[in-house]
Structure formats: structure tokens, C-alpha cells
Image (cartoon, one colour):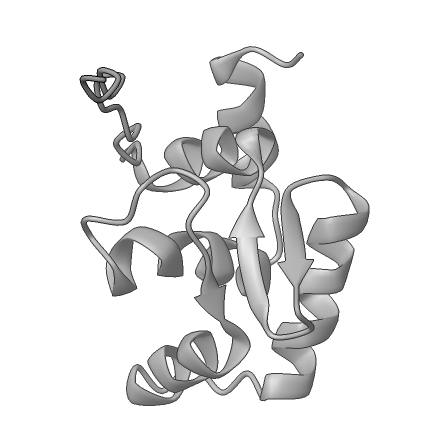
Length: 111
């Protein structure tokens, strides 16, 4: 598993479309929990509103390449969910970590 410094160095060399996709997760949903995803259309809308010029087809192809590297998982052909490695890479790109979702165990019902 790469160190945080190795991930930051790797992130510095990424083409802009990948940096923008990774940065979109905390930008679009600041309170997003680790592993929670975004739809391709949501990412494309964010890019359009920021004038980035990437089309949805390019976003999908870039996400497919991220999936091949184990950075994200594409679910139901429309949702992009960061993996554990993806969350670490997002943190390397943005300096922000998604909060882990933790809740206490539910006690059993009385009988």
C-alpha cells in the first residue's frame, strides 16, 4: 500500500480530468461519508457549472479507467463510488478526508 507521500506525488502527475473528478466528491457533497458516490450526471453538471469543458462521455471513460486501477467502483452503470484507495487518493488531492460512518451497535430488543 502506498504511503500518503507517494499518493500526493502520484496525484501531482495526474491529468486534469482525474484531478477534477476526485476533487468533485468533497466539493459537491462536503458532508459525504467515505465510500458514498456521485452520479456521472452530477459530476458533469458540476464541471459544466465551473466551465471545465469535459463532456459526460469523457467523464465516464475517465471513471472507467479509475475503476480499472481500483480507485472507484461504478455501480448500476451511473454511480461512481470511491474505494478505500480512492478515498486516500481524494485526500491526497484535496487535503480533506471523508468522515467514517460509525454508529454504536443496536442492543437487542427485550423479550
